[in-house]
Image (cartoon, rainbow, N blue to C red; front, side, top):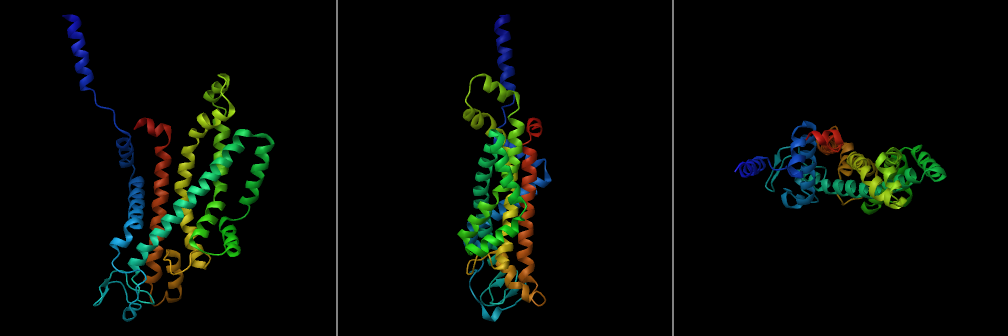
Length: 306
C-alpha cells in the first residue's frame, strides 16, 4: 500500500507540474518585457503588412493623377475622394504612394541583406576557420574595401552599371557583405578555441564537419542581429540612391524618389517631403529597435532566464 501510495503521489505531482512553454510563447514573453522590442516589432510588422496588402488598402492609385488637386495640403477632399496626407505636383495621393513605396523598401532591404549576409557569413567562416595566409589575404581584401565609404562605393558602381530595381538589389547585396565577413570572422576565431570544438577534433571528426556542425550554428546569431540592423542601412541606401537619381527609376514608387520630387517644392508644399521622410525614419528606427531586441534575445544569459 505504501508503495502504491508513493507511486500515486508522484503521478499527481507530475500531473500538477506546469507544461513546458512552447518556443513562440517564450519569444513573446521575452518580447513583452522589452518596450523597445515591442515598438520595433510593431513598426516592422506594419511596414511588412503594408508591403503585402498595400494595393488592397490603398485609398487611391499611386500613379493616378488629379490635376485639379495639385499641391493640395493634408486633409484635402474633392469629388474623387479624400487625401489624408495631401497631393503632390501631379495631384497624386501622398498616402497611397507611401504605401506603394513600402513594398520597394521591404523588397530591397530583405533581398539585399539575404545576398550580402550569405556571402559575408561564408567569407568570414572560411577566413576565421582556415586561418594562416588564407585569413591574412582575405582580411586584407576586406580592409581595402572598408577603406572606401559604403555609400561612395555603391554610388560609383551604380553610376557605371546603371539604375533599376533589380540592379540596385544586386549592387547593395554584393557590396554589403564586408561587415558580415569581419564580424563572423571574429566570432569564428573565438568559437574555434572552445572546449567542445577541441573535443570534436579529439573524437576524430573532420574539419569540415567541425566547421559546419559545431562552429557555424554558434555564429549564426551574430549574423542574424547584424542582418536586422543592415536592413535599415540598406533602406537608407536605397532611398539615398533613388533621391540622387542612381537608384530605382520612375514610374516605380519609392520613398527616395518622393523626396526627390518634393525637394524643389519644400517651401510651398512641405508635406511632399515631410511624410516620406517620416516613413523612412520610423521604418529604420523600427528595424534598429528590433535588432537591439534580437541581440538580447539571442544572448544565452537572457534566453536562460526566460
